[in-house]
Amino acid sequence: MKKEQVICKVICNIIFFSLILSLFSSIVFADEGITIAQSTAKAALDNFGTVSGIALVFLAFGTIFWYKKFKQKSNWVWLWVSVLVTLGLGYSVLVFFAEGAEKGIVVCETPENCVIAMHIHATFDVEVCGEEKTFGLETGELSATHTHKEGAGNSVHFHERLPYDSKTETILDTTPLRVGNIFESLAVPFTSECLYDHCNGQTCSGKTEPGRVRMSVNDAENAQFQEYVWKDGDMIKITFE
Image (cartoon, rainbow, N blue to C red; front, side):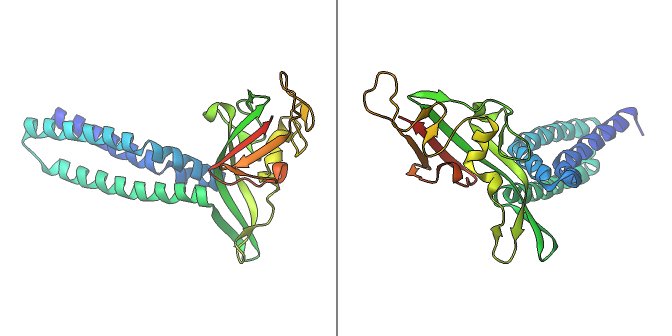
């Protein structure tokens, strides 16, 4: 076998096995917690088109080079088939895990002992007397509602397991998803009466009428305030004005 053929085969194997590792890495992390697999799958799915495109471009150039150099097609046919099958299976797996991240994946040790693993997000818009308030980056316990670098501190995340009743399909303890939790982690007052350092009846600078705390969820007024259990995709606006 010529030296060029050996090099090409090595490159082919590297491309093939790199795809397998990158596409199925979410499964490898499952023993660290199913929510990690979900998070990894969502991130991988976002970049799936880029990864696939780069791999296919490399394969196309490699095929052209191989054929012009050696006038052989057989060695590339199996690689194209293998890569396309891998991409198809990988996409299916990533979609399954990514959708599960939003809907939640239920795991039961026994019919009476179940948990639901979720990776969900919500966006907050908080203003006090017209001044925007942010939660900051990397705030809150990872086992509770917290922020990451995404969303400039106003996007909150929750990826953990909660006790779940598989018969009624309900979460048994929604306490970690209370809106009040994120404010408690910041040591910031938030109730139906107060927001940050302003309480109902006080006036904002330059105003004459007393202000009050208001809250809306997805543009609909909500009177649950700190007790509201937020859901994936919620747009929550809290103001004092």
